Amino acid sequence: MYKVMRAAMRLLLPLIIRLHIVGREHFPAEPPYILAMNHLSIFDAPALLIACPHTIRALAADKHKRNPIYCPLLVIMRAIWVRRGEPDREALRQSLEVLKQGGVLGIAPEGTRSHEKHALQQGKVGVAYLATRANVPIVPVGIAGTEQVKRNVLRLRRTDVQVVVGEPLRLPSAGRARGAQLEEYTELIMERLAALLPDEYRGVYA
Image (cartoon, rainbow, N blue to C red):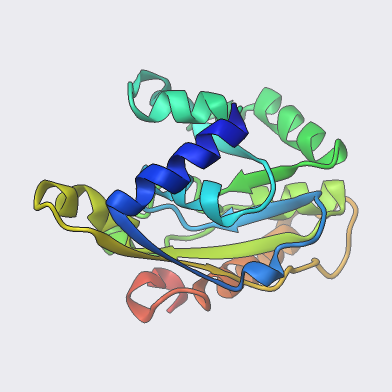
């Protein structure tokens, strides 16, 4: 079903989006790795579905289960549902399992959509925690333009969307990093992500 959805997106998405992918060669030849991206709108997932050569298991807020359009796509992508606002040990367990089994885990380090002018907010330590526990590289991916798709569709216009893939990042040390070290690693991840985005999207990492 994932392959069918990818094929469908390759046919349908160009009707509303002009997708520009930069740095596709930076995707590792084989998983496991963490795909860390900024999150602007529901159109991020279809864009990544086309851009990434591997099957992505993404973390998604469980509130999206009520979205009749977005939910089926996330189900096909076998999203890991996360309860926001509280520690979710089951989502953490599933995430580590995906990486241990050689998969790709998709995470927005901010933990939510970039609401304030669609610019980056402070990153959370989840990506650094998972990368050090599973000892896998992080592939930063910057997305720009998807927040304009819905408005432009109503105006019968296509939207230019850019997906920029950065070089894989391995954190300085694996193992059980905690506290200040996780915060330090998170800043490094977010700086790498911000560097892939236009200035106006960089937010607190400008």
